[in-house]
Image (cartoon, rainbow, N blue to C red):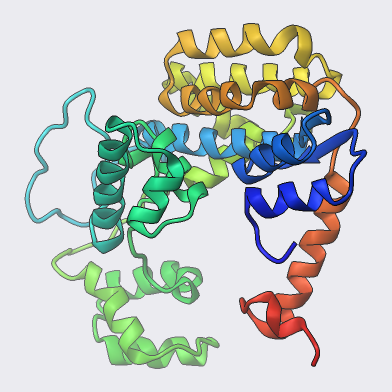
Length: 344
């Protein structure tokens, strides 16, 4: 196919009659094109894509509850805040992202949902906003723009200085507060960064008579998502302990973990025909917005999802080859278009 559209896929199938089974990803172009080009073929949603889509929903759920990601003990802050923060309401999302990307995401989410309220199709919305249909679908399934803003977007000090932080703290507490001198000492210890980086790093120390040890940072949203999506018997003991602490602090995430493990059981045992509908009903009743959005997507493609969770067919081997080809292409050509691979 020269292009990725339902029309070209339907035409490709029509030119090759006799297809009995179509194993595909969740893209609407393949669902629509398969129905048009081979109406008698059985469509099967690939299990890897189903699991991947669930992982994306879990990541949004973890981001929504990121205030429950513990950082260990909670001593007094190392560095004084400029002003005390206003208390947050029980329902307000923690640490809302700011900046151009966050503003653009919120504006696009509002535009997509406004056009959906006017009964516009994904195709029409994509054309009007200059977005792909997959992007429109992702915005449509998100109950709020904050579900799309998974990463907190905060900056951090250069990682190369993290390993020198105990030394810098000890020297600062002993009275060595000259950034140029500290930079020279770090160079003698093997540090290859600039003096400006050291100056910015130790600027946090100023105004403190004694700099205590830093408070451990909470785990990243994607790390917690990975713990949830990993089989419990394959999870490292330290990660399992961290996950247990999070689930004890947040019953909502504990319910998400229960849903994920139930879905994994359905998928591994291929019992979708019998158990997928009760699972979707239970998830909808539980009320977690990100998982409800995932269920909405399943219901829109329910027959193929049931087949993917019941039949032995999967396009996992093909996906492996595709990922390998993409990796080789990016190593040689960067993120360029496939036409650069074509020879004259």
